Amino acid sequence: MTYAHTAQAIADVATSADVLFDYLDDQASLGSHMQKPSMMMLGGRMSYEFDEARGRTIGSFIKMRGNILGLVLSVEEVITERQPPRRKVWETRGPLNFLVISAYRMGFEISALGRAASRLRVFIDYDYPATIAAKFLGAMFGPIYARWSVNRMANDATNAFEGSARS
Image 1 (cartoon, rainbow, N blue to C red):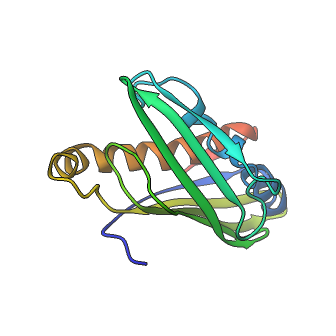
Image 2 (image 1 turned 120 degrees about the vertical axis):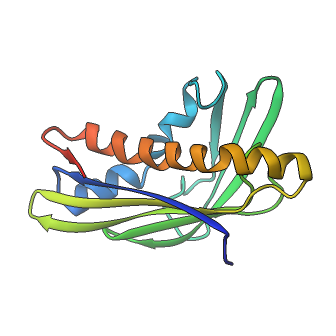
C-alpha cells in the first residue's frame, strides 16, 4: 500500500543496535507517549491491548483505544516486518477512528554506529481521513501530529540511554 504523506525523525542513541531494538520492540515502551495526557492529544490518552505475542512477531496485533474531547478513538495495528536488530514495521488494519490521520504504516530502522552507538530512524507514512471535515483537519493537523509522534519516539529512545545525542 502507498501513502500520500510521510514524516521521520533521526536520532543517535548511545547503545548497541541489539539493545536498542529490544527496547523499541516493546510496543508499550515505544508508544508510551500515547498513554499519557498531552497537549498534542488534547489532554486525552490511549490505552493498549496486546495479543499473546505483544507485538513481537509478524502478524501480531495491537489495539489502541482512547478519548479526546469526548470522542472515542480506536485503531488496530498489525506487525508486518520484524528483522532484529535492524527494522520493525506495523500498519493499521480494519476500521480506525482517528481525528487527523487515517491509515498508516509506521516503523523504525536501526543502524550500528559502533559497538555502543546506533542511529535510529522512526517513520510514519499516512493518509488523511476520508470525510471532507476530517480531510480539512488532517491537512491542518496531520503533519503536526505525525512529526510529534515520530519525534517523541526518537526522543524517548534517546532519553532511555544516557550519553545519547539527537541529530
